[in-house]
Length: 273
Image 1 (spheres, rainbow, N blue to C red):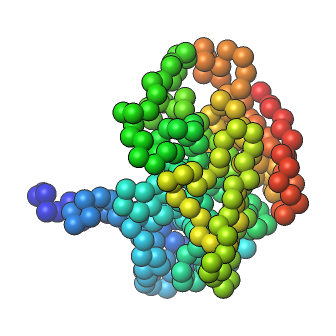
Image 2 (cartoon, rainbow, N blue to C red):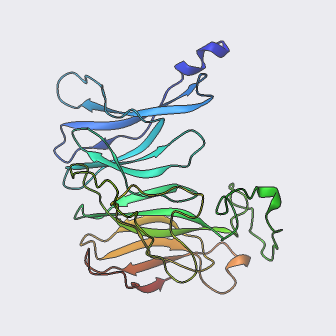
């Protein structure tokens, strides 16, 4: 094998199967010398007769495709050169995708609500003044970190004390809607002390987009998301008990949701051991 053969090493994601079972969509990622990066797009493959793979998107790096439960839409993560992954939604048949998030550090995971009207996702929220939230402020110019915990780097990620992973809920955008030129950009519906998106100098949602709701707060990590069958509860894993820095236990956090469009009030929370 030669270095010139590296672009031939393509990585195929887990497939998402359309509810009608007629086709699947996968992400194909490969190294690309000209981009000095990993690039990839989404491909649709027939599950009946000959596979006949067909290119579905043309982003810099598109990954993690998931069909909506009703089969009308396809959500995926798209990242650009030097930019973190954001949640996008496209019609299941293809077309122009619509950006749904503008998180400073990008989106790491997402799930469809069972009614296909909204998506929950996880994104890391940087502390104000850190990690690109202030234009022109490089990492070496940020204030020093004060570490008072034991597990601050035992996660294969690095420092997370100033960029906790939180849970958000965003209405599913309509890729078929007319664009809204000149509309006022969406403002974040945040809780308590931290913005959800579009920090100064950071990414911004397209005009007319609906801002996400942040569902969790505090100095806690959150991992994994799943909806209840009726879509009225959202489950995630988070260690919130006293002494959590001294053990490896975690809890199942159940977030009770309001009906879609009911308002920005905070949901009720229950922690199960």
